[in-house]
Amino acid sequence: MTAVVDITANPWAFRAHFEVWILVAFLVGAWIYSVRVIGPRAVAPGEVVVTRRQTGYFVATIVMLWVASDWPIHDIGETYLYSGHMLQHMMLSYFMPPLAILAMPEWLLRILIGNGRAYSVLRFLTKPIVAGVAFNLTIMTTHIPAMVNASGDNAVLHYTLHFLLVGTSLLMWMPVIGPFKELHMGYPGKMVYLFAQSVVPTVPAGWLTFADNAVYQRYDIPVRVWGLGVVNDQQVAGAIMKLGGTVFMWSIIIYMFFKRFSAGFDEQQSYRRTVRSAPAGKPAGAPTQDEALTYEQVTEAFGRSTAAHEPERTA
Image 1: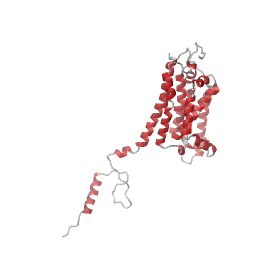
Image 2: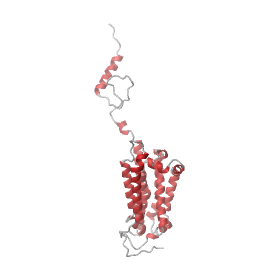
Image 3: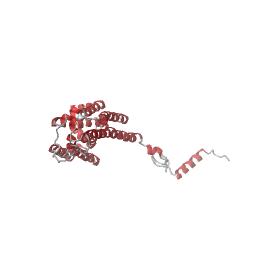
């Protein structure tokens, strides 16, 4: 059944989303209160409450949340273009959650979670197998045609799906970059884990790319944005999901690989030799740890060694 849409409607007409503005204002206010009021009491004297990098990540998180949830991406994506809908979901499920986690100071999350039952629940939900399965099930569910068609007309279902997307993605990223180091996997485990997260999105992405008719009847409407037909729109959506689910994850995997296995590579490949710290009582002028040998030092040491091994001459 084709959705009924006013063919005289302007897809780019501005629509206010007060619920999004209230959410953004609440998050910004909560962050400022936590950093200014709670933070100084929660950290040891002299410790930094929040780093400049964490503040930057928080700003990026808020900007991405606002852009993904407000006009025009929200309105275009929910009514006219499935590719816009896909861009919105990729921002909420792949791009924004890791920024939010990187913005979260460890002390703040420990205050929110505590050390009791909530921590035990979080520890269970962030186990790689649990978090990975929950995240991928949510991704697959949000691409079921019946679910997509129904969520556009049901506000409760719509926001529930968005909540599940963000929530399961936060859990999925916790074993990789979460503030709690005890929940982290090793580097090889992280790379395998992220590779697994990049596989499932290729299923709906391929389905959308090669479909020759409308998969989601909600978007099979006479009003077209940018002249994109319904099939071309689906192909663009598949490409967006492919880039988000595969290229994005693989880029992080490659970064992790070089960060982990290239540590110390520059020092090992340097032509300048370094020596270890000399034991107590070392000769004056002997090189210390990480100090490069000079030509004079090498000549002096060679001279001492030669003199020590020369046999004494008899008269």
